[in-house]
Image 1 (cartoon, rainbow, N blue to C red):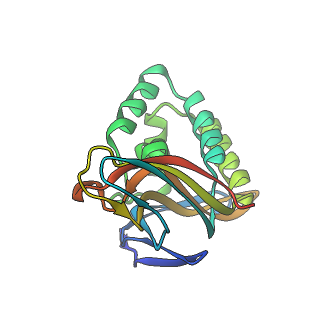
Image 2 (image 1 turned 120 degrees about the horizontal axis):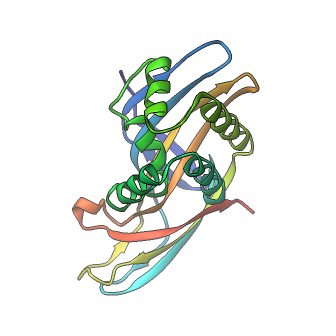
Length: 219
């Protein structure tokens, strides 16, 4: 298990910072390997929005940041969910309700979060224990690689609900992020996924306002 350094990315005049986190390295044969860094909650700072107390608002920002879109993540999630039995699908839905990773929850559920480290064989067995067979694992990883190849610069469009707070929120947006690298016999790509739910102004534990939206291609 390895500790990652904080990553600071200047993104369209904004700064995106991922906290130092444990990195899950999963390597197998020369043809199939993947590393997944579950970085945790990243902060996007310098956004030009203010939402008054007891009000709602929105924020839109064009980022010079490569990431999968919400539609990309949706397609990957649907493929993964289609491979699981009803019990596992329900477990993920319940996990998503309480975990900061939001629509990325299936990936943190699969791999046990950023504090885990395992060999390729052990992680493959973990995925099998979740109900996947070797053919499904290969199919899912190939699909992941194909989508990672189309990763693009993105725009975020988020709605902010500050109706329950007696203070305004501004400037920052906190989003869970999962990043890493995937290799199959078809090639290698790095990837980054941003959650579709987050916290505006402050971290949730510090009284941030719930926020929800989409990550779309930069126009």
